[in-house]
Length: 537
Image (tube, rainbow, N blue to C red; front, side, top):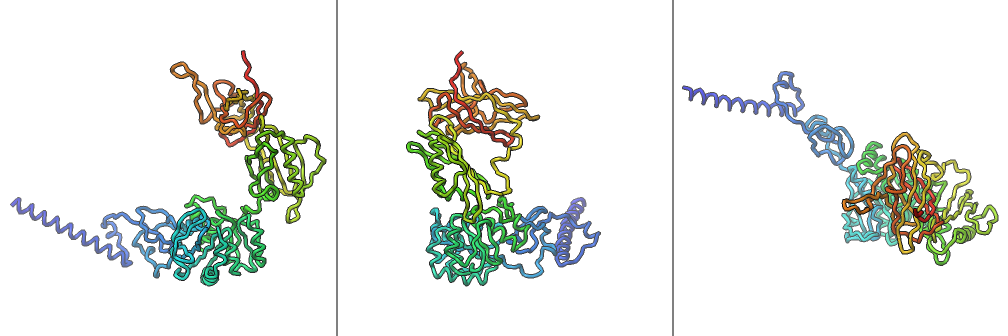
């Protein structure tokens, strides 16, 4: 009898499980057809793990399934439960927007790959098109096989024309005709860098405003006289036709097109996904920066003339649209006055006007000149010793009447709380290519700081060091990543010090070395350090 009862219970349990499974399947079918579930039935139904998808917006990521709530990584919309009524498209999903990118031999890599990344990250379908299906070679030797030849390429919502070695392409009638025809169908046409020359050749830019890469702006104005060429915009929007400046500007232009097509949020999310600092404006324009005033004088490489037996090396170049400063070091048999004399002769040959009659041996001069637009500029040239056979040369220009503050003249916050005193560099024998720098640093702030690095024009490398005894009683030098600077005085004249390696010239007593110290709070402090002999006890 007990065996009969056990079999009955087993049979009953199997039937119960089968009924539960049938009920679950019925409820799923019932809800999927849009019916609501009663509270009793909902309470009785088992809890199943939901899956989440992007709403059917056509971003290209609608079918990707997520195991928890969140936001779509492409369009940024909140995820919804898969299978819910909101997840079902009211109509057939829209086709993804398409981007056609023209490529050709000697195309600039970043001109097309930067926008390719942008449009792809924004959910568009991107493909490349070339004059033929054959492999092309980019400006830096990358081998690329295009997706389509001209006649085989599908229609696209965005047509992108990059730059690089464009002469052969802008002279190809088949390419020009293809751009003219495909532009009629496209929602937007975007050129990058000197791809503007190709687009201008089609006549589609006539009567419009455009820009291109900084060195070729004047050339574009001559090449396309019916186009208004500007140098103060990173990208120029004429509605359908958008042109960008050089190289990385294509990334900004592509994100801007995304904002026009899908809204600011999609553009911002795309930039964040790429870890790109997109400003959402067109204000940074390389061609408008004030260094062009110095490049007109010294050439694109801003090579400083140096006296015979000497060689100049550019150390830094920075500024804004209204102010610029460049620094060089001149190594060799030259005095500050001798180095400055050559610089001043170059400036005078460029029609700069010296404001005062130079004195013999002068190491600083003031200048005035006018640019192509007739705007007035002031300039300063200066030279100073920085060690045996090393001279530092400085050139500054500033637009007269400019309201923007000079980058270099604004004191860094916290700089006044750090002082360097009693600094000196040890004179070493002529055959020695290293030396040591000693000083006292005072931290006058209320919180600790740290010295995290240093540079000197005369040395290839400057390191922070500590001298300490090893287990065998031998003095060893240990390189440090930082030197702690507690509130008050820190002595860098003994155990702690700086080492200068691979000196470019011999240091002799009486020389001055330009030393720049980098601190944890972001402050950089430059000091002129005299060379001295170590005092013997």
